[in-house]
Length: 286
Image 1 (cartoon, helix red, strand yellow):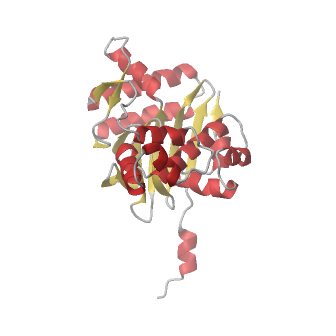
Image 2: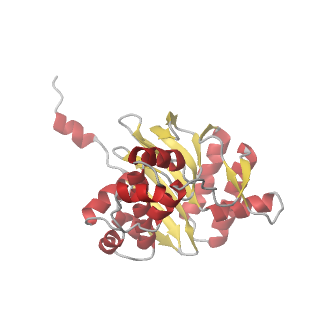
Image 3: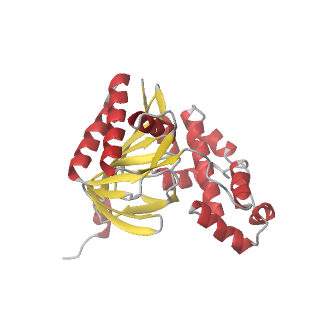
């Protein structure tokens, strides 16, 4: 029997993504997704990414190591952890994720350890095999993703963070700027200050005081990404911020320095996993 390739293509289910944020708590985003075709580019997040692989298999590179994570795996990703990947097989994977700001996490940690000194956890591992914790995270996520009551969401977020921190016991670090030695830190700041521009490698070398290859390698050691990918990530983050504030995708693309909207959309989907239009229209719950 000969398989009809066109029918095989038609049988592949489309990706399904639901992203939500709340008017009273815009720094918190929740996502539930079933990815089949999605392939993420190397990127990182400004927030903590906490959640569960609910079904299927996800092949992911994180901080230079390859992981094949399956259903029931708990995810604790620190801000700025570089990662990328896609489906582990033809059925894809389902995930529930919560994007939590450093400030929100620091507030709960300070409350737990009863000190006014702001501390943030740093999870030593990204993936954890813990069925009980996974079940709890799914319950907390359901409240955060679906409840229209601010108090219910606040209590759920507090409970989620307390259980994660209490179970996994991450190390605590002072919340202070990372020390930048040398001028590669200046090069990083240069890109942050010029998100909308088309920066050249020669410009960066002029700031860093290093040769081209040295600048690229130093940038990768510092951020986990080469300069062009890091700058692109900052452009996408800028677009996300503008979309959250009601700016149109066309205007956001222009203000972030993309050649056009299609160029921006391609990179946005590769990093965020959802189109800019869908992100901008994602349910803003009150």
